Image (cartoon, rainbow, N blue to C red; front, top):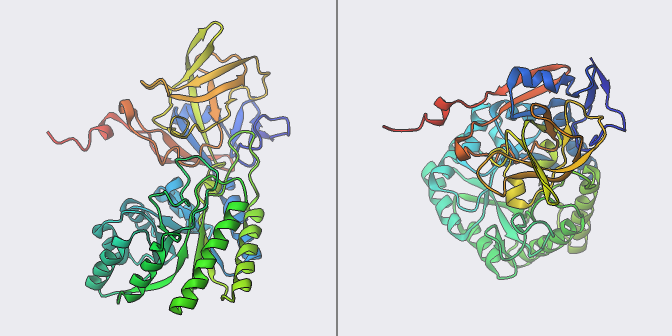
Length: 443
């Protein structure tokens, strides 16, 4: 039994929907007491709340369909993907975007409808493109001049005409982290409009017998907490669409403003799905009307925004190191192997004492991982009750990119993953073993 999470529950705004206090006074997710989950599955443990995933999918579908009926929503698979998770997302009515053969294979194994899949990537191989054509991927987003000839050859050999979009760089800085901004001219992604490369690429696509030019794609970066960059990027991109119409007689029938929709990790307040949808829809309609263009079909690609809040990482507290006048470190049994984002992006997280979430904060500590790097710090300056070895620590908003970017650094075992719903937990990935670590060795 659980009691609903009251407004006084710390971090309620970043915990999954319906986070609660169990009868034992502990954090409960999806109706499951986290201590009981840990007793069954161990730590580190990643817990995904089904209801939160469902609500976020519905929120983006509804928001964009209401703001712009000619729209589709695809889940950005790079945020987190597995066969069980792909089935969950597909059941909500979303398509998918992918960037590797591995993601394509997972979706195929999950029996996802491949016509609703878009294949991205700045350096697709011939083998990956051949796989995409073989499984019937709906759209391929061309990201380089050299890819045009490569895809034409592969499509010719397969005797198919492949619908494609061209990823352009509008030259817009989304004011996100330098490692996650992608809409500027100085980016490995997309063909710049400003240099003329995008125009030349469209001409080459139109000349290719086995490529069907359907439209344009842009992606500005992630996470984007402001609406202005989308509006600016759309203005530039549809200005380019007008040029294509006037100079080449080409209609941009499809347009994707990408994704990058933000979630809260701590004190942030990202726009709502409706706010993103209204800003994008209004900008598209305004630019089309001003430029005499037909309204394109639009496709958006939320990933983090679907799954970020749904996931919570659960760790067991271990060593404590107090350095008087400097810092107190509290170490946990995970770290940069399962969450590289703080080390890579300076990502900021909050933390919660999962065994006693309502306990008063007593000290400021830094939550450290167990791996052999000084930069292996998960949360700096966290206000928490005094934690003892064996207690559980929860880090919310852990659903996106942590597992997608995890590693076996120090030959760490990858964490178990469970889905929780209505008081039941389902293991969707078991914890790695020593045998798993060595299964690729050749002796």
